[in-house]
Length: 416
Image (cartoon, rainbow, N blue to C red; front, side, top):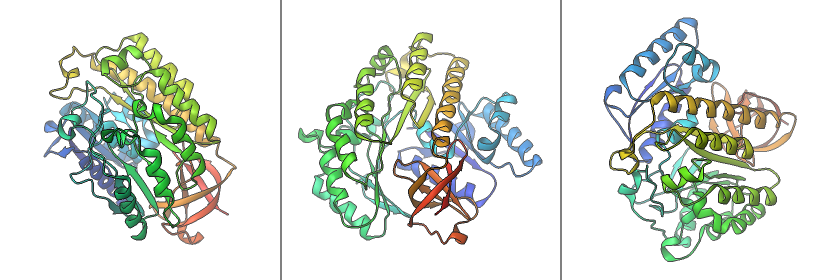
């Protein structure tokens, strides 16, 4: 697990985003330290309200990049003027705040808290369905803390989900270190059954399935895609971390899938669903990654065109096999992650641009900046409704919107 230091500037919205980043990091087993020099990663949540603030953010980013091994810049300046950090030669990853926790996790599995207890966070009910995983990735330290998969019975998880719905949750997030291997400790593949049962619970809500490694999903891909196709309550969204487009690197990473299996999963969902969101992860600069391996990852990214992509520069975790490998230079990792991130922004921007002019049924799940709310459509794409009070939109509402614009990472919706 990583240690982190986070600094937040600007408005209440920024502070709320930093709290969410910290919550997700702590849920993932990561811990804060007193200062950037002691941290594996420093996070700068920026403001850019005036030119003086912009200069201050650049100066602080420069300072932090010298004090810590890995700097992530997020917040308003990162979104509006992300190129300014590269122009100032600041060695940092510029990310949307929602991508920060996954980036810090360095491709590792998340680590649910002990007891895997469900919790409500606003409109969102968080349901950890199991603890542990079936993987043995060469770069991941989380496995030392959590061990092999331990799956509670389907009925037990369904009751937890029902309790969250009765407590007012409008979105159930099914989480785990690898949701796709739920039930494997009992020799069964239970995720499709569990999702069907959760969707049978009375009430108006949506369900998002958390990270599922391709190795666990491949054998149930058709059954699982059918579950998505027949259940309107399920967001048509799946997070499949491929990590590399090179089978050689996947073998060195000790991943349990190969590129063809990942593609077969994507093809199956393409066949079953009219519109869905693929989320995936890439690790840039794994120690044995050659230029050719990197180009294979770039080719895979361009081929499958995932609408949500987490790009992480490889960093060593103590005690792991990959930590003993001779690493690549920092500039190589930086260049590869920057190239991949640029293509990612192009792909995501095209996806949101394609939504403009369409009508969508969305769920208002979180407060946005000012008088706005963050909504999710059926494919878990983010749609911002501005002037929510004027439209009478409250958190937890389902509403129909027309998409009137986009800003690369999200769309803007006008209530119908």
